[in-house]
Amino acid sequence: MTLWWIGDLVLLLVVAPVVVILLHGVLKEARGIVPSIEQIRGAARAGSKDLDAVPLLLTTQDQVTQTVAGVADYGKSLDVILDDA
Amino acid sequence: MPAAGIVLIATVVLIVLVLVFYLVSTILALRKIATGLNDTIAAVGEIIEKTEPVGGVVTAINEQLDAAVDALEGLLVKKAGLVDAVGLVDGLYPGAAAHGLRNFEQSGDITPPRIGEVYTKGTLTLARLGREAPIAALSPNGPALRNTTYGSGAARELYPEIRQTRPERMPRSPVIGTDAPVQYEPTDEPGVRRRMPANGQPTTERTPSADAGTV
Image (cartoon, rainbow over all chains, first blue to last red; front, side, top):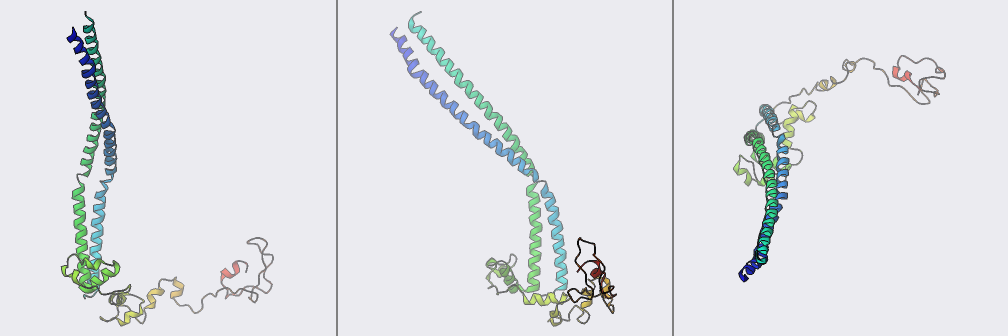
């Protein structure tokens, strides 16, 4: 009978607190991750939204092509009308 | 059942309840994490998809800009000479001469000449192309490109036709003041005269605008 009581005391005073402490730690860490995940999700969504303007790069490329072509034409004209050094 | 057995059962039940509470809470937290990660993965996938063509487009733009810079740099050196080109660049962007021109490695060793806001050589060259610049007649490299005798005709063509034909008499500007040939009295209200001018009708030399209102 004494062993039964010793077992009860061990369960109550050692096992149960250890279980509670360990599970509490796991739950605390899991809950601590949630805000970080929310922030990462918000940042990813915002980043994706910011990149909606990326297709405009194709327009920029066309504009650069036209501008460079215009500059080249000006350069050719200047090459003709200005004397070399 | 002995009391020790009851206490044992109660303790085990208590531990199980604690396990259930904490494990369920942990499961809920992990579900939130999984949902958040799924959304994040979807957004990151969109980012990857959207940024896929960026590299090629930016590379193409940089190649075109590089070609333009090379061409302009070459043109500058060809027309102004390497030393003057470095001086011109340094005049516009102080300190840039230390880096030199991109396609002329030796340009970094050149001490840039001090070229002010007016580049004499360029001014003379451009003046040859100008229409009204008097300096055009003194261009050092060949005759002036403009007509130095009748050069003003081009500028005169910018004015209305009546001035280009050089008429013998142009409409005069209105004469105003106390000794003006036509005197008007101040009106009580805009556009209505008290009476006609006292000393006669306006002459033909006067412009219609002079007779249109009070003076």
